[in-house]
Length: 358
Image (tube, rainbow, N blue to C red; front, side):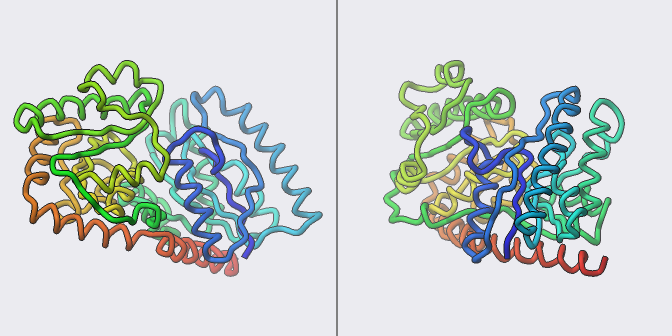
């Protein structure tokens, strides 16, 4: 099947790392693994920093629709249109028009809907995102948090599509060091920087009780210079390649991240694929990718004392840590590229059935 993949938030080849780029890449990889031909007809990003940016982006999207329409009329359209992400700040302005023009099955992965945005400065973006929901034949809810609003709006279209990863790069022999904990994040302003600050306070508490605890924090970003003094020298180790990060996970005992207001976090699945139990904040979609008291512990995300206590409790109980590690590997294996492919195939098939019924 030839599938047109649209990515309003961030295309797979965007230069800046992020969860949006990661998921776009994973969707493309899973579809390719299943033998699908994946076409990226546009790399237009529709994300708006402010509502005032939207008219210019709408104009650019209209030009893209015209360009792609002419191309598809000359070369033939794909078999389906699949969009990754759609919400009021990044509405899909291309997929609905193309799907309607060529009568194609159309599905969206990770749509979200916040009814409070139906009025106010984001009302136009909300309406455009809702138009995409109306045009789509199937909506892949990535988290239970997003699923609630989607079910309330279009219950017959919603399909569960939990996040998935490529587990293979993280599956290697483990040589965990006692007391070694690890974390990884981009040091961006806002919730990422807030989580780093909470992690720093939690780490200070851990070391006061157990000086043998050692944290390695991978990542980089605009806030690094401001955040690095919060940790002992050498704690921040910079941005690592996937291979180097997998090596770090293999010699660590536990992954810790507060995850303040985190949508879900691919790093949690990657760490579990490497056999690392997780201590994380109980927030939004994190509850879908970490099994509390199964593959890790979930605590209040902005509570350094709770994070420190959960980390030490798990870190120095070897039997529990070993059991959680085995469950983490098994859980990640249930959410690998093969699982992602099956979920995407089911989503596209549901959209095709609705399209045929129309």
